[in-house]
Image (cartoon, rainbow over all chains, first blue to last red; front, top):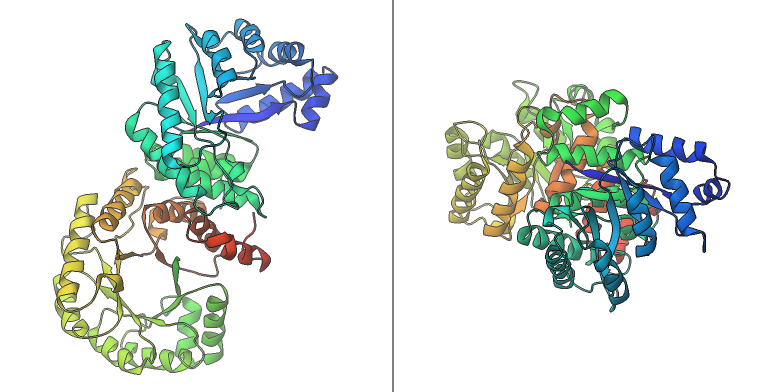
Length: 266
Length: 266
C-alpha cells in the first residue's frame, strides 16, 4: 500500500516557523494529529529554516511530537550532526531525508548511515545538478542503491526520489520520470519510489489537478510513496482510488472506508 | 491527441428518448452543440432503445444532427441494415460502433464493413462472454485486427475496446485491462484503444472519482480514445491534464487553453 510522508512540519512554512519560534506545542501537536487522521504514514520534521537554530528546533520538535505520534518520523536535514542527535532521540525506526550523490552530502551522510537501522530517501541528484534523461535518473538510482547496500542498508529500506521536474519547461519531463521509475522498479523490485510531486506543475496555473493526475501516473509506473500534504483531500482521494485500481486494495476496503469517512468524494 | 466520443445522443437516455419521440430537433441540436463545445471529437448516435423504431429514429437523428455537426458521427447499432442506411446518409467518414467476435454479430458485420472506408470500434467480446484475463483480451483484439485487416480496414482505423470490468467483483480487474492494453499497443502500435470507463466503478459509491482516476491510468497504458459524456467537466479536465503529462501537448497549449476557457479547474 502507498505510503504518505506528511510534509507539513517544516519551518519553511510560515505558521510552523512561528509556532517553533514561540515553542507553541499545541499548534504542532494539532497539525500532526490532523496529518495522522488524514492518513499519513510518516511525519516529516524539518527545522532547517531558522538559521543557527536547527539543532535546538529539531530537538524541541521531536520532544513535542514523539509522545503523541502514532506513526514514525522522517528526520529531514542535510546536516549529519543534526540527524545524529535526532536519531538518538527517536524510539521508532525513523526514515532519514536524505542522501544524494552530491559529493559533499554523500561523503557526510555515508559514515552517519553506516550501521544504522533506518529507512533512507535517496535523491537522484549529483554535482551536475538535476538528471537530464531517464537513463540519467536510472544510473543515479542504481549507484545510490548499490552504495547503500554496501554499508548494510537493504534495498527494501531505500526510497529513491527520481526528482520530478517541471513539464512547463519541456513536454517530455513527465514521460522521462515515468520511464525512469519503470526501469528502476524492473532492476530493483524491492526498492521504494518516493518524492515531491508539485515540481511537475511549476509555472502552470491550476497546479493541483496536474499534481494529482500525475501521482496516479507515477503510481502506475511504480511510485509507492510521496512527500505531500495529507490535508490536500483531493490528492489523498486520488491516491486511495489509484491504489484500489492498481490492485493494492483487497475488496476495495480502504476505498470504501475512505468514502464512509468523507475522505473520498467524486 | 486523445479522442473523445460523446455518448449523450442515445435513446436509452430518458430525455433523448423523449426528444426523439417528439421529433424535438432543438433539444438534440442543443445537446450536440454542448458536446462539441466541451471538446468531443465524435458524436455517437444510438437509436436502439425505441423497439421497432430504430431505422426511422436513426434517420431522423442523422438528418437533424448532420447539418450542424462540425465533427464526424459514430453510428452506433448492432444491426447492419440500420448501419447501411446510416452510412449512405453521412457525408463525412464515420466511425462504426461496433463489431465483436460474437458469431452472429461478426458474421453480420463483416460483409457490411467489407470495402467501406470508416473507423470501426472492435469489442473484445465473443460467445463465451467477457474476457477472463489479459491474454484473453489480447487474443481477441489480435483476431479482430487481423480479420479486419483482411477486408481492407487498416489497423490505424481500428478502435479496440478491451471491455472494462467492475473492480468491485475482483481487485485484479484494473491491472488485467491495463496489462492487456499495453500488450495490444506493443503488438499493434497503430491501433487505437477506446471504450467506456464507467464499468470499472460499477457497484461502488462515488463512482466519478474512480472513473476519472482510471482514465489517466488507461491513458498511461495506451488508451487514446474513450466513449464518455463530454459534459462531465472533471473527467474532461483529467483527460486534458493527463494528455499533457504524457507528452501529447506541446508547450502545454491545450492545457492552458482549457484553463483559460474555464474547462480545467483544480
